[in-house]
Image (cartoon, rainbow, N blue to C red):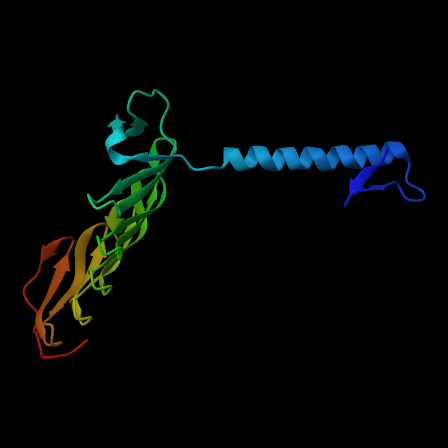
Length: 199
């Protein structure tokens, strides 16, 4: 048995039987077939937001009985992308993105089995970061920060289990401290002194 390379037959070299050569050729052909099948299997299905619905917390394409798996897309009237939401087994799973109509990112947020769980970043339409939050099982945890559109820090809040807990500060666009409070389990305590510090 021989195979051709650039139109010329290639025959097994010394010490390689025809049966071994046939086996190698068969394995190579099998690997190519597997690669082709996997390329189709791993292709991501995309549907428009208006074509999906949620039943008992599970996302379906309208008229289908199997939970949706793929990306949900939404667009502005202009046709520019508005959002992309990945779904696995009917649940939002992975990084979700939202854009302004000028095509700059508005929000990037990670979901785990339908629940926000990770980092959420929001931006202004000029590209400046608007806020950053760490989210655990749908609740903000740790230091939540907001910025003015100019880029100066606007607010810092210490969060535990989705509630303010600890020191909270607010600044003007010029960087002057205007508020400083203490919270405990979501309840504001008597005001602490607010100076003219800058972040």
